[in-house]
Length: 60
Image (cartoon, rainbow, N blue to C red; front, side):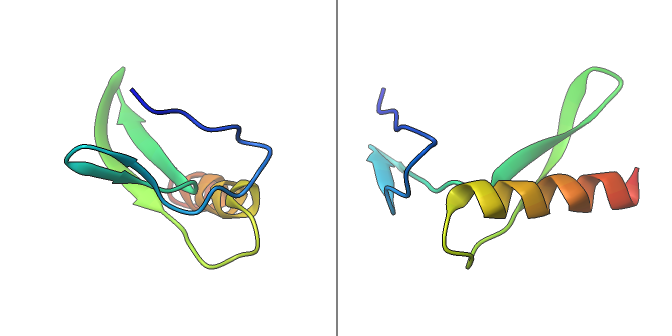
């Protein structure tokens, strides 16, 4: 498994068969993951993730 330091912006991180980018979060309902939201385009993955969290709050 490949991991990265969330305090940096590593760009694309690869695991065979997957591309992982910061800024994505799961959307859960009744204890299970039912969807996901992803945001991209800011200077850092932390900002992208913050925007994704705000999106989840807006629809919950």
